[in-house]
Amino acid sequence: MNRRNFLKRGLIVSGAVWLSGKRAVRAASQKSKVIIAQNSKVLAQQQVRGDVLLSLLDNAMQSYFDCDHPVRAWQKVARTGEVIGLKINCLSGAGSTHHELVEAIVERLQQAGIKPYNIIIWDRLNKDLEDCKFKINYRGKGVKCFGNDAVGFYPELQVFGQAGSLVSRIVTDLCDGIINVALLRDHSIAGISVALKNMFGAIHNPNKYHLNAGNPFIADVNAFPMIRSKIRLHIVDALEGQYHGGPAFMPQWRWPFAGIMLSQDPVATDAVAWQIIEQKRKEKGLPPLKQENREPRYIFTAGDAEHRLGHFDKNKIETVHI
Image (cartoon, rainbow, N blue to C red; front, side):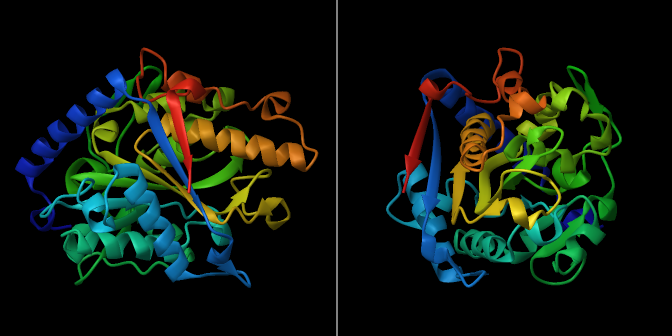
């Protein structure tokens, strides 16, 4: 990897300061907003309608950032000249991140001033991406796409709480900002795997952190400064949800949610997603996650005074349905 094509050290530093300032304001004085945008027409005969999905994304962005135009909303997330990474999830085969959502985000980022070669679609491994029909583009023109294995990990161990990991160079060296594109799904060990757990794909040793339903490890990993300082936005691909048997693709436990979720607060996002999954489990006659000893308590840990990653208290979350 020719880092000169990506690294803009001054922008990285200024971006981190810009972001930390915004977070500080939100944490001190504001409720966390979570947008849930749904439209049953986005799914037609098991296919995603790209035009409807783009409209959902636009409405969610404009509502969240209180803008009258989607491009102006995206300009609050990414600035001209920056390198922006899209952390998708390709572990579930047919249940992985939808191409149509990635394409919609990439389209709006470019309209907001981000050059195609400054957009990186990424996940753990090149093979994971290829298995989900994403085309690896490491050096060619246009939007980049590759896994952590293409560039390796930053050599200095990151430590927070009980977690110690190496973080992907995609996060530490290549990207000024990250858009976390997660999934709405159950996880057979951690309870759910949505915004917070998706960042396990940024470290070299996620297999070590599934004890005790991922608590406190999932919160600890997200508290690594190299990760928390880079994430600009969380978008949950909720076109289809999975309420049991995750993260593996289990079509018998999936349902058409027909929407997306969007927030800058990963804790609030996960708290809302957890309740959506619990409600669907109840409708289907399944017990609460707590009865299966996999209540996602890492969400509470992520919002505690030590981690300060966001709000889990429903009184501090504004859920907006559009």
